[in-house]
Length: 99
Image 1: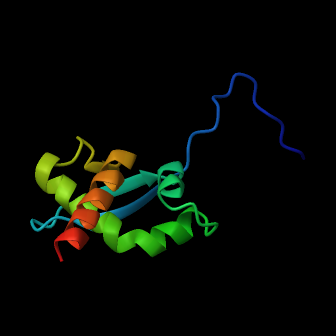
Image 2: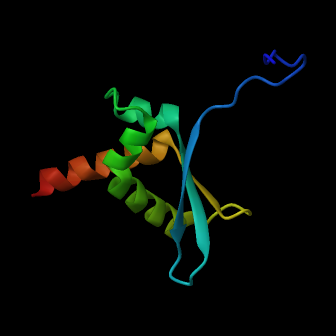
């Protein structure tokens, strides 16, 4: 039996990459980033999962700092945005200038 498009179905949603992190109090926070955000940050042809693996340490550092500043949304979700990535990239460049 073949699949056919369902009439009135919503458009495909953007791919998000999700992974759990834990607070010092033992609560789990689900961190996520949209694939397009990660691919805009690093245009290498690895694909979203490969880019997540490559930049995992940076993303976890960004998530930790963002959680300290803002906490998590009601469902314990923490969204890393392109603004967060640009801010981290800028602070890295400033740290390199200081050295």
